[in-house]
Length: 272
Image (cartoon, rainbow, N blue to C red; front, top):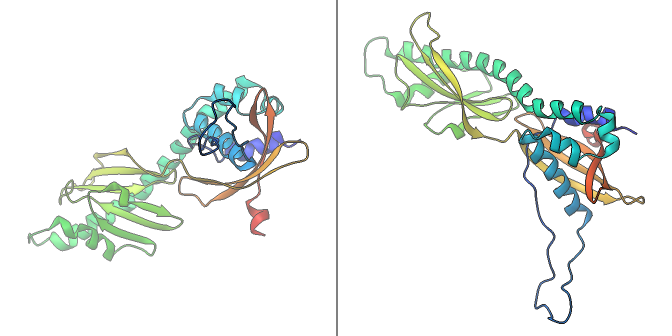
């Protein structure tokens, strides 16, 4: 039984996805003298609904509900019971975002200097300093992998692997105050505003509530019913801006509902 080892892998990946797809009824007229027949759900539909419920509860921070409702009793025992499982679930996303925030601020400092240096080199003579040029000037000193845009739309900021698109907001920027948008590793787009006064770091960094969800892509790649009635499903998952991975779930029927029993990261095995 791999519940304990597998749960470590999943707890390093999951966060958010809404419940998906309900079973559909037979199309056409329904005879009044006979009960309507419904198509039984396929293994794929069951997998999507089960995994969807799993991620939704994780994202909402409902650790007790997650541990008691969507994982099997064997997996819950492997997690040390609900009182050990729930705090791990509730704190997972918060821990990742707290860790990614520190590195994001470091990246924002570097991006800020690109804009500030561009303004200093082009506006030092007191000539007209159009804010629409700030992004272009920042791009002149940007290293490979960093592209600049000038816009008030934070959704244009993106991070994909080592490729960064940073955005300077002309409406909120001036030679003395700069506002940037940057997508952190957890998928959220941050707005950073700082003073350009020498030696000053007066400013702020806030979440714009834009950008990808923490789980930015979930897809059931395959689902098959095993001889014992369980369902084995491969699920593609992307956490924030990290590369996509594939988790293999074993879903079992327990207590009148489908629950996740074991899960394993099979990314490397599939790639190989």
